[in-house]
Length: 305
Ligand code: GDP
Image 1: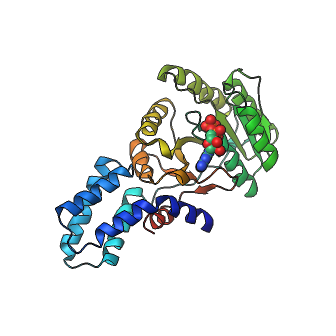
Image 2: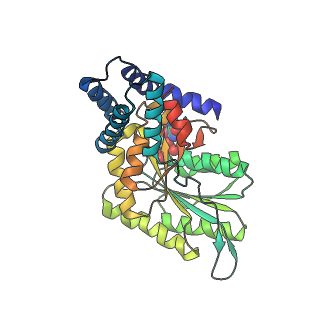
Image 3: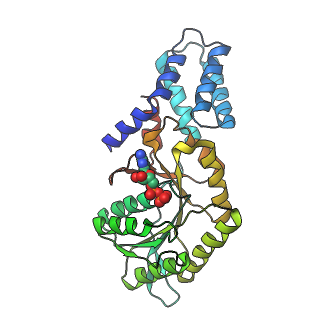
């Protein structure tokens, strides 16, 4: 975790350093506040949250009267945390249930998102974390459109000790997802992770595909979690994609990938606000260990390091 924090801090450095240097100016005049606003906006926080933050910060600075850079840093830290929502429940739901036939049913987690965002990788990394925590995991390779996605997932499965259920290439994703959950029930697994296809031609086709996967899987019982994988480097584009997915399925959590590759960590705030669901996981690299639970305090500290 220390290593992950260090990596996050490195990528976010520019923002933190910029903010702190502005706040340590002798005179916090109108221009300086504008520069602070600009900096926050370029970090992808979004215009409205930035304005809220700066307004609150200015008001607090005004009330406080004198202030040291340390005090200002403290205030900024608090305001950023408030925007991120330290109170939100960010646990990935691994609670299963009971089938209509009275059998124990594993937790079913659908992993959704546009191709290339890191869906399969995140599914593999999450499987690794869950297996390390003592869960028996089954993987469903329901991304039957991207050639190699099922192979990629199966490789992860072998690596972490999880069985992979797959179908023919180009086959019906919903049927693979259904079979994976069935396998999970038969094997008395704790968690079934379903990697879905993310072809975003039109909302209608996505709805057809993803909506069907969810409906079919739900024949076994409710889905515990729909994790939307979002690439942090895609900025506003990513937000548009996120909105489309959220209209098609009830997203319950966000996995924000490639945070190691951007200084635009503000996207955490923007996407939570856009979808009204918490960021639960962050991807900080391509390696097997580079998935971490999202911790608001550690995140803000890395931002302001
Ligand atoms: P999918 O099409 O959404 O399933 O995407 P993949 O899982 O195949 O990932 C696409 C690329 O992004 C691969 O090269 C991954 O190694 C890379 N990737 C995934 N997550 C991260 C991350 O958190 N950081 C970095 N730097 N690369 C990542």
